[in-house]
Length: 391
Length: 100
View (cartoon, rainbow over the protein chains, first blue to last red):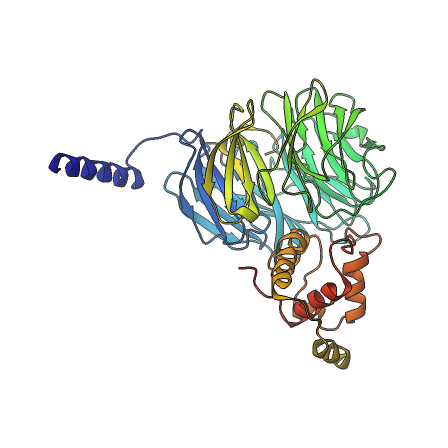
């Protein structure tokens, strides 16, 4: 009995020491899940398949995303209410928090890790902060060539210490060169198409693509050759034929780029499009269970996991890329909002908003290998993103 | 305008409590993906009592049911009856109930 008690005491002391941060550890197997209704995040561990704790007080996270510091220790959380919060994954504390705008949609970190940029809907524009202390470095109001102040969408980092983003109302793509952080050099492309609703950059950092809501296709910018201007691609993609109402905008950050092929949710269609990443020509279209929101490639590029908008948000499908067939349909629970692979893809984590839990699957067997409680979970972000262009 | 608003509130449609609960969740979660979970706006405009106060009820109900052409606002008529849309408009104008 006494031996057992002292063992328990030792365990407790060990746990306390861990909490106090005395135990050295890396962050490469950590991540964050957003709890959208409660303004909190949980710190996740993909080795233990466990939650390490909760950090609260992050404001309105009903739409939120994260970029990581280059040392993968800090998460920059971009909240709906314009809040920008720097969270320390190791101490599980808020390091700094600023309210930098009215409503915001996302953000990005510069290639050198020194600048954090936030895309704002209201007031429309991009604000750039010092990644260390979140002090304001530059303010870029998004006023288009027609004088319209626009919501900013699809903000990503790009090689050459640049940020790239799109203007929803004005229909423009801007490239901000941040080598002089306080004086961004802007290159503006107008007339790129109606209502770009999100943007993404390919994993090699070469192509920036903005999905268009107001017309078919994507606006494509070759960042290796800005003088060539914006071209239209995949015009057949999108709302050809019967137009279905769109209940949730697809997310292009989740466009699955596998190196040679890219998988895109078709706006207003129960289809995903497979395109060649080199020439941006359509290769195939695959019927799926609903309107895709995220199409996320397993890190080896063999499978793409897809979730769907309301009312099909209880379903997840797995597309096998070599055969271009749906090889699995899962119904993990209500409100599947997001999915994220562990760095080498042996696990995939799903957030089930309406079930208040996270499910962990083995993508080889499709077996559920874990479940964790979470309050209205939405985005899941693992630290592997710290070292990827555009995330 | 105040009169229209007043009469709409008085005739506020009857929806059973279980369905009300579903509608609150739908508005907060699914409408919230564009209008914000707190309904303070996002890609879509804010849906707070202050922003909706002066808008005619009929046009708001119609926007919910049929969407708004040339904008991302989709029609919700496959999921909502007219009475349910009217209940949502009424609740939004009064200050929308919390989901939890």
